[in-house]
Length: 143
Image (tube, rainbow, N blue to C red; front, side):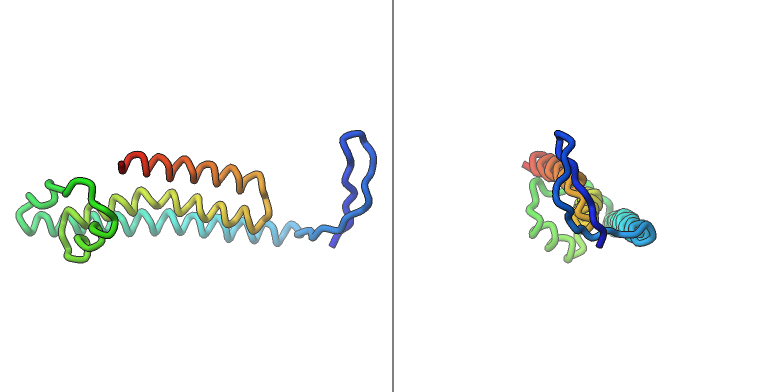
């Protein structure tokens, strides 16, 4: 615990407050872990979605190729999952695209959690704003 003196706008001193301080090595270690988690979310999200779309393409080609070109309009996520579990090529392709679209959302969620654990309110709010724009945009596009 370190003792900090907070200055008022007029230049006066408040009573000393104790706040926990992180040393530089623990801050760098924490930031490194957060960066690795974000990189893993992006890497695995794009890899998994690409693998699912490749599987959809292969199944579609093996079944004649016409199924993958005729997706069902406005499929709900529950219906999409059922179609993907039946190995319907169009359902798998749509699931892969959905996962690819959700990958940046997971990245922003990890950033919100990392900034929240750092107690960095400014960047938590900025990240939540970005998340709100992303969710609103996807919701608007789906309707």
